[in-house]
Length: 123
Image 1 (cartoon, rainbow, N blue to C red):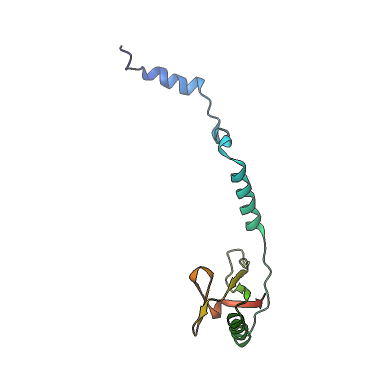
Image 2 (tube, helix red, strand yellow; image 1 turned 180 degrees about the vertical axis):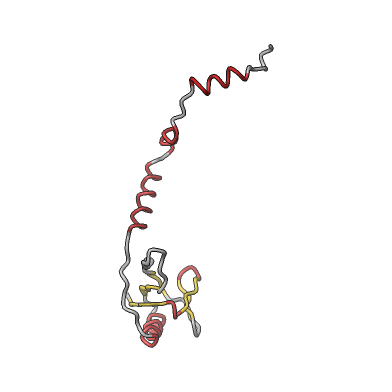
């Protein structure tokens, strides 16, 4: 047998009797402090609950939107969207960059339907 050939029986014996896989322990050294900090922050955000605010009338919502847009004020929006646990998502803190008859444009050129707004307050 030359140097480039190997005996498969020796390899199989090694993995069956000598090698001990440490499972996930071998990956723990790859978690840096910024990774663990990000994971902790993500876990806290997932556990945060946002109480439901009162549903405002369409008239009240449109008046506040118009005022915030005209005065270039920041607003806090709670949308009617509810996740699988029947909880609201985090409030949106944004400026109103534009609007049309049924939606508004907020930061990042994102459109939000006016009918999807549950509550709005001007900051």
